[in-house]
Length: 417
Image (cartoon, rainbow, N blue to C red; front, side, top):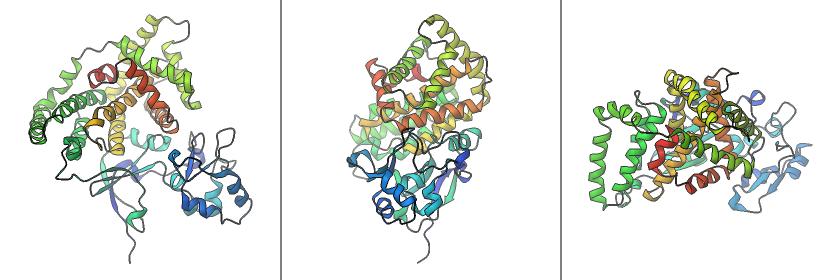
């Protein structure tokens, strides 16, 4: 029987991606719970080579709570670094036993395998600095390409996101037409005349309509969906979309208050990774958000940094944040659940985008540093890494916004524009 090599659809940057090892600006083996699957744990118990055998027995422990993810886990050092990293920040398990001895988590990160009906996909988490650099630096980085993987059989593909094939008997409009809705969102983001924030708002308007339609009986809802897509996605409507979105009033003092409030609460309750804390410090310095700061001055700096630095940069490099959104849509398969989760899932994406833009404006306000693509790469991977490494991050931020009644599609423009 020949080797099975599935062809998956992937963004173009995945053709170039490979781990840069010890030259990475923030090692992925530090500050992150490293889950170990059962077969890998059992393999580690048979290792005889010293000192690796003793290290494996000392540092790899069975999980007490299976719900925490993984059969076992590597206990980190007090510095939060993986104990298997050598002085060059390279993995001693990989060096001593080969790549085949790595757990699924270690072997696959930052790759995210998806399954959309019958189609398989591959994308990277942008919590990896190198993946973020490749995904955000090039205008064509998110163009879809076919990539061949060398797996022995389909069961070895570690799928993390699934969107099941539509069941003809499905009565939930969103589940039945998830691929169509997801494709529409991606098409909006790819519109060359729409900036990333504009595309997000326009997509949100479309999803609000979809959510309302989904409350109706399915035949009526499907007819309405066809009409809505025809209305919002025809060339004339898309040509008018920038003007429509730009006409929305966005109170910047509310935007600053909401996003800084959510950030302050999270930092106060959880602290965050060192790279996130450093980013918060830069934001505070750029916007002069100290304990005794003048709110009017901070707002002025925020507005001026957006208008004079960030907006011109975004207009000259529109692909940067659009690529972030496209990557997020590809990796999440949004929507992959039903009507009940549609708004929450989309707002979670919108909030992540809003935080990224917010921190970028804060960095743009620092007159002592030039602002460019490297700042975007840094903010994206730091925010993404803090979200993925700390399960409290997004629930904390979303709870803060929910308490302020700001976690609704109606408030979307205030958060992201």
